Image (cartoon, rainbow, N blue to C red):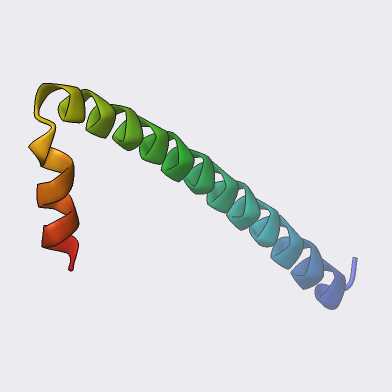
Length: 59
């Protein structure tokens, strides 16, 4: 195997690993967003003013 071919394969392996990591992180972010939405909904049931307070804080 030539050195260039070996470098190309190593690069390809690293790229595949990085793509997998990015996909895992994307999935984790989506899961956390969904969890966050559910928690905000529960909090809003407990304290309806929470939504208004959060809206004003962001502005």
